Image (cartoon, rainbow, N blue to C red; front, side):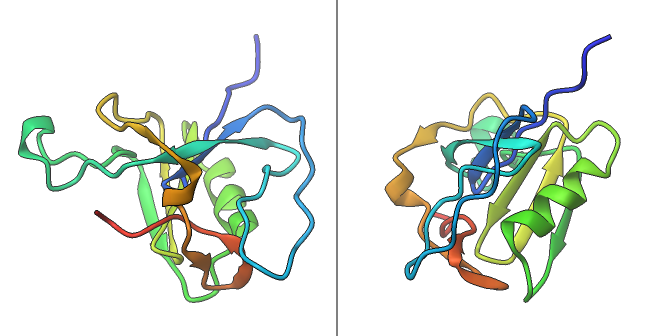
Length: 131
């Protein structure tokens, strides 16, 4: 039986692959390639507030944690520890969303839309603003 593939959103997304190491920190906030379990999947829009999709979040059916010390690794570790959390997403610089699915109405955006630094490490990008 193959391992479950996992993905993470910043409302940027990482995909579980067991193939990368964390990106080196830089002077300015950058999107990391992932870690040993997750690969960056992309920057996606949030779908909450859109009545045409039932106001569902891009990562629905899972859990959310907000922390003033949030980092990409903190979120990926948290989501990896939960059963069925295929996706992990970072938003607003401090929110970590873990879920089994990415809403099909979420659209991939240019990485330039994900620019908010992580609250716990300002050299990493943890999503973007809700627009």
